[in-house]
Image (cartoon, rainbow, N blue to C red; front, side, top):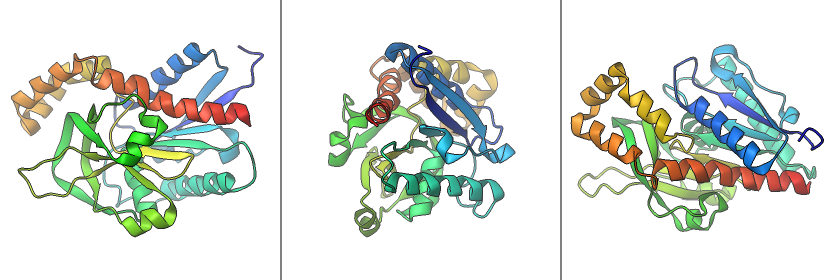
Length: 277
């Protein structure tokens, strides 16, 4: 594979040092994708929040930005966030230029919320109670037509873990910026709360999910079986919800299928674009 051109992926870690399964999930997907497609693919990790590490925009072909803890509003103006958004601006400028080698990016959870704040796409607020579990996500018509969600059922199941949400999409902003809402959270007919946005295509090259498509059943199960994590989930959500989650993790049509498809579909698009250029 060494005689093939090198495809470089940057993983931007927004976890701020908090232990998580996400970073391992991204790396496993990339390793599997590299082997399956026989690519000379290399990735580097940047600790954006804790160490203020941000790559040079031109050094990588594909960018994956993680989730992370805390409020997506309180970090406005921090040094790491200024550097991070400066990178995003440069990637956007690059993609608007006549350079044929475009930069593709996938944003997850916390970075989804930050991008919604950047583009002013809706209201960002804290949920009445955290959303946590293996939950259904519903595709919009635009989502059903998007290649990243190819093969996904409607609804499909994925790991959702968030205290914050983005609601009330600003249709004029979406239309004016040429963006598309691709997915929304499950219907909750017994409550009058608006449904949160769950996936957005910002451009031909930028896509984002509020949920965690990198999560895998084995990692989630190991995480949930830790005594302190079990106690935390049962205290917050109840024993029935905890057992329900463990049961969903064993279903191959749920998060195992989601992990095997969504980010690999994104990589298919990005790699094809890179090869053609």
